[in-house]
Image 1 (cartoon, rainbow, N blue to C red):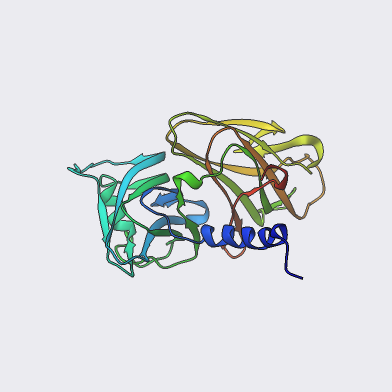
Image 2: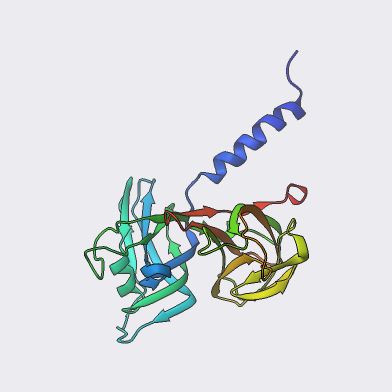
Length: 288
């Protein structure tokens, strides 16, 4: 017997969703959730971002650096920009927007952290790499970056996580380390919208219902506000007990509830190797 209509739907709808998710963004705005230039980290780390623009179509696509979502930006000697910076990507090709080019296009910035909003006039796929250039022979890298890095993908603004609850899974922290922690977890938010977004952060399975955010102990769940047109990243650690024995590395997940569309991510850094890993939000199945 032939398959029923319901059975056919159950097979092709998930396939269609996967196909749509892999398509490049059409004309419109995209949000790159994290960007850095000459950002100093721990142990002499120095982080810089470069962006990769891929045009799968048969027409040139112009990509414009629409705005920076701060974060922070330092421009001791700013340069005037008479029009928004752009890059043109020829058909069926890819272009690297270098770290040095981006610094100039952000008004001759010497230090930047935050998110970016890009605008494209055609189908485009945008990724970036945040690279630790510490130890590079070039103090100010001008070409393609070399070093340990973390990949991020720009999100079409209409595909940002909508209001609801999301999980950031498989994160790592080191409880009560005797010495340096072996893993650190950071959680970032980029808000391109015109209104503040309320974020309720929770670690569902942590004992004591407490955590440490940017060095301050907080009770869980914890409320954050991400102002309009801004970016914020927090350092999330487990609460510690004075005099407690040396602890171990623990895997955990974070629940994030938002009331407006928002770009969010987690970054887990292995302090032994220096390698970072990105965790992307997963919507609760009950809300899909």
